Image (tube, rainbow, N blue to C red):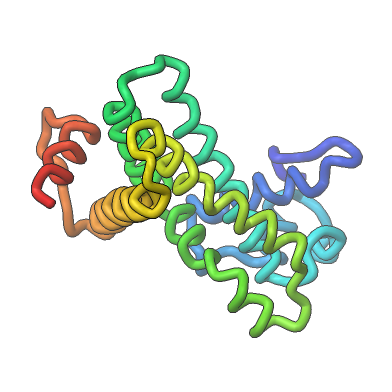
Amino acid sequence: MSSRSYHHGDLKSALLKAAQHILNDKGIEGLSLRAIAADAGVSHMAPYAHFKNKSQLFQAVATLGFTELGELMSQVQDDSPPTRELILLYGAQYIEFAIRHPQMYRLMLSQTHPGKHLESDPQADKAVLDELQTASLRPYTLLRDGFAHYETDKNKVKIQAQGAWAIVHGIAALIIEGHIVIDEGMTTKEYLATAAMQI
């Protein structure tokens, strides 16, 4: 039995932990229902009690990732910094999450089209996809609410939040693919502040 054993009634949590372990170790290619069953130390049929197929497994793991990212971004509110500083802190948390969890971040991005899942997968579960969509929009929602503190035009707020989201997503993706390297001695927040000033 795996060291990631579970208590009775906590199978889904154990399977998701096993999925995260495999994802970090082997990437998306190594993630399958059979693999997480083996990693969790349960029968190869056990995951089907919670996931109809591999797609639902991916969606559940991606939801966990987006939830964690949203929570990390939300934590910077506790210090109540100036609004523009808050947006920079949100962005830095977003980028740092991607740097720490590159495989998770890649999986998250691959699962952010719930409409396509419903069209392509006859077994797609709308409730699962709704949960994923809600979690995946959390980073944008935080940015939008940040901009709304000092901009009253709702359309401008939306565009500003979308632009900020695009910037941090682009920087995060380029860093984890090795196209950008932040200079030693420069913080992620400092890099982001300098990069955003050039637009």
